[in-house]
Image 1 (cartoon, rainbow, N blue to C red):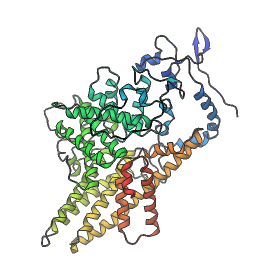
Image 2 (cartoon, rainbow, N blue to C red):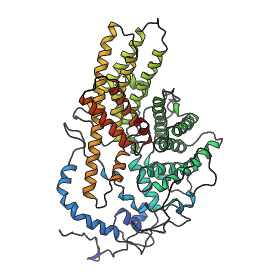
Image 3 (tube, one colour):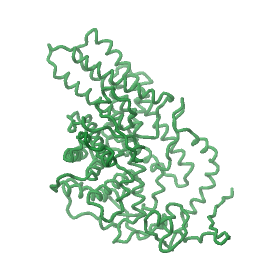
Image 4 (cartoon, helix red, strand yellow):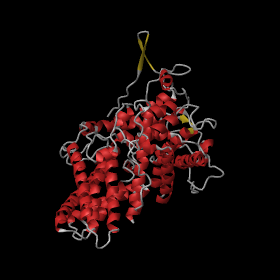
Length: 574
């Protein structure tokens, strides 16, 4: 099959001229844009505000590879069109296949694969680091002067991270991390990210972002440890300072490092980092950001919304960690913080006034909540259920159980109301599987709340005749909830296999482990907590049939895959 190569043309004086080969700058090559080759900066670099760099040593290797795979791609063009011609909404019996494949495809970042920490003087190992920083060393490849993958020269020593690297590291974070930890306003971040006058807190946030981003990239693992050490060094520096109130970027950096420590280090380190994060949130008094009613909420709404999101992310981390270790909460004051807005409103700086958590739990609000806000609501319900378990353990043998069963019934009614609203939202789908990892996690945690409530009432042996109906209803609802979680686990596994097959068709340099790792890195960090709860429910049932055994096997397999990119899942496999 012949391969058609399209040539870009310019019209000058009525004549069509072809752009001279090799004359495009590095920015235009990286972005696959046409370069006008103007001096000293082309139009694209001028609009992007980046330095216009040209290299005469540009390698044609990538172009040859692209031409090589164009033929096979034509052969699967028809099947790809059928796959991607799917509406975003869910249809009965059909998974949502409208996922963003580019966000999983690591080839966009090939130009960084040979960069090492030795290339960056600012990232070189420090002589002395605080005890918070681990002593493990990471084996790195030898530094090279020229990066052959994309023909981009390595940065000079006095410029450790050039504009192209900076831009792609930021994009890697937005593609791989932002949907899981949506605490950053993109426009506000880009307004200062390249400023030479950015604060130390903003620099710390940058390194924290890049630490998490490189940890989810198979080709940039050699940069991860250097970024991590730099972030920890800056965080410890701020901790030692006696400042009145930390900047919001400092709190955001703390949040990102907690997630990194939990996923890539170990639980104890993550727990310690979470303690520092919570203290920063309390020091900034973010638990009362919406207390004042005389303030004009429309003024600086983005800054206030970022602070709300920092609080709720720290609250979520505190809650999930406490569930894992059965510890009391550290952040309990939620009465004066509104729930996070929808992501589209936040990204577009569209002012909205969201309800408070207590208003939603009481059923007095009809506001549409984001998947993240819904997960906060269900996580709070789970926390109230576990608190009720502690209350049951403290009852004396002769005390009345009427009050306890009334609380169980109240929590069950709240759950039924919230689950009914979710069922209405996904009424057109058999499997509510979404490309949004936060939405998938929200559905899982909603179902797991029923399992937590069932375990609570099961541990309470003093059931009366009037409460037996509640107990039987809860048992049936728990079985249905566990089945939904198992169905979602199966859906994730099937979808991962489909994506692996898709990449194997499109890429001549297909790497199974690379694609496999990137797929399961897009799952919410605390998904293993939900899967383990579902397995616990199934194993507590003495009458395991073939369907139940198959469900447990699917959940265990998903946990095993997640454990390769998330250490939270490792402990549940033992």
